[in-house]
Length: 310
Image (tube, rainbow, N blue to C red; front, side):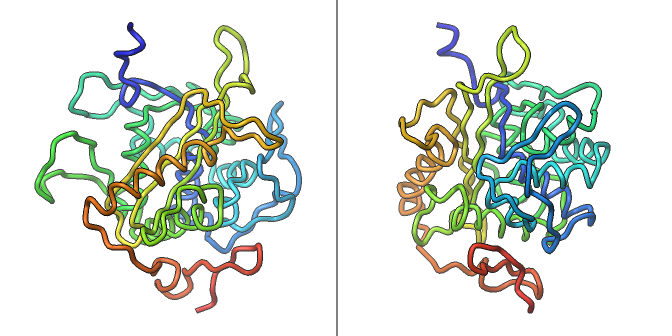
């Protein structure tokens, strides 16, 4: 059967949903347009062109940049992207490898899909992973660059000696450190909680995207792509795991349980529980939120996330 031999990892192309918020925040922080201390209005839905943008986990208040990531706010991400601007967004996504086919060991590689004309509404929806489609390999390689110190490296199936694969800098080390803190917070206090594994400092981001209606306009709210991209240990990232589920059913309850946080994050947690001990990674305390450069530590103040005054 053709479907059984289709390489979803490198040839499949999917709208990834909220995992793209990581690129939106990295872009904004790296450009200097936005800082971790800034707040954006998420008190009510945002209207852009003929589209109304809602939050799945609505907080209905102004949110700090870390809160936008932790609560996975579509409204906040869209406002951040609009503050940076469409041309800069397109330039950043190209720089971080999300607009072109990438060099890979297999011939089965897809080219990302995105709008020819990058309008204001595209800037808004792409900020949270709608209106752009990429392969899982694309997503994994670009997320790796966010947490490894800011270097994008071409993905490969071959083990190379350290230093042999040449990459390119796409964000600063300071931005990468901020992203590691945000990824960690998304697991400890956000939508990725079911990926947590005690002692392994898991960080990551959930993603849930409605599937496009085939042959029709718009999206099908009953069918989703749910994902979780996890990295560990966040103190010194070494492993990245991406789990993507096509049309998961989840459990039937009052709360929708087919989202990335419910169905994909636990899988990543289970994988880490198995491979952590196999790789000889000793459980550790959590230094990434306890010590850092002055003024960059993210702390919790009740339900609100703020920056510590160091």
